Amino acid sequence: MEITTRWHNSVAILDLVGPMTAGADTKPLHNRIGCLIQGETHGIVLNLAGVTRLDASGIGQLVMLHEKLESAHGNLQLMNVDRRQRRLLELVRLLDVFDPVDSEEEALERFRTSSRASSRADRAHRRGRLRRHHSLAVC
Image (cartoon, rainbow, N blue to C red; front, side, top):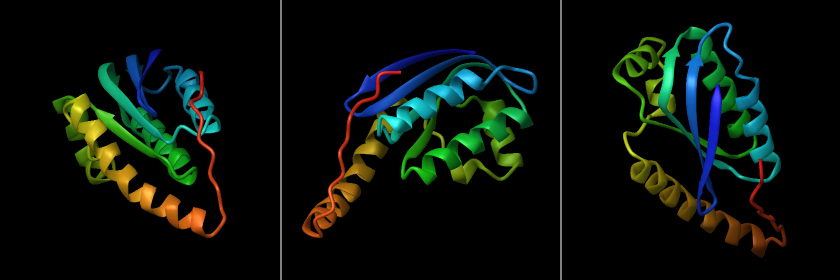
């Protein structure tokens, strides 16, 4: 699987090319997500436009990545999910969990909306003398 990382402010957009199936090497994707989380990047968009095949194993990988980000207080957004991929997510009852978007603008708008809520939470934490430091990871 080929992965290209682009940035929009503090949101990482990963353009994926290749299969997400049993037997496909998804280790680079897991490594990239791990690196981004370590760099405190918690907004990640996976662009599936270049994913040539997705099966149950690939869905399992997406679930693992979602859980990994969620445990790090992050958010994973799927973008450009085709009709077959959407149907597969629907069959395994994960369409609502991932709630994929059709465009980069829509994905970024969701992060802007959620960052407003987290900004309020951050201000509350600062009042409680807890500080969070954010940096952009270079992966």
